[in-house]
Length: 317
Image (cartoon, rainbow, N blue to C red):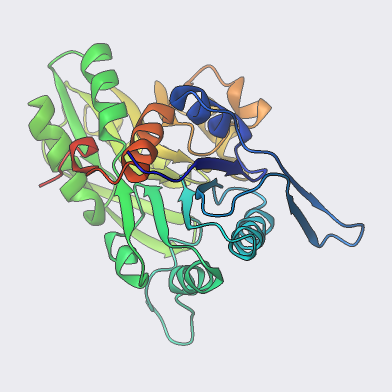
């Protein structure tokens, strides 16, 4: 057991998840003030002694993204200046992850920019879940633990759906994840061939694999405006799928997403609570939200105790 104290702080992005994690660990959420001055600047005051403590800051990169990112940076700086022994940034949803490479001239690699800011401000370690691109771990010069949502999603899929199902990757980039789920579920595998014309705009063109007469489950790391997902649902049904469900880790659900889902032929959307659902979203009967606190609390406990967290991973090979 580590000899220095464990403290968990939270910004304003997902306070309910932070409280659930603390309840699972049997500790109280540490006290802090995270608000704004009248001009909108972030104001942070740490209300507890953290000298020599092992500190975890829980902050998801959800809307408003830039405010929550800045809260995280200012909190880390405050904790560093208060002489915390180690600071781990717990980022259930890592923002700007889709901007992870130069796919056209004169565009930034914003995922790297965010990693640089978090590292330079004083974080010693990162704990996150289902990064949009695995190579983002290499953007950091500090340890990164990228948990998988599979221990949360796989039991739900096994319990709710029969054996006559096919796991569908919405694009070529998600094939490895979909293949791993299909193998564990002993299900079929299909891939959607799509062309992306612009950010948040894609057209599903073809299905690689057999889906006729089967329950199709689209598997992805996030759903944003849901335009791509609705297009995929329509294509799968045109190819003969019996019904279509979707399992995603991060429910960004911006813009017209909820309205699109409600009007679509999608039977259900299963998400985790790495991003809190807005009231309108939570009222959508098609959306089911699964808790991630157990996985994060186990990872935090093992990190604090200097134990391995490899036992928490569903290895996706």
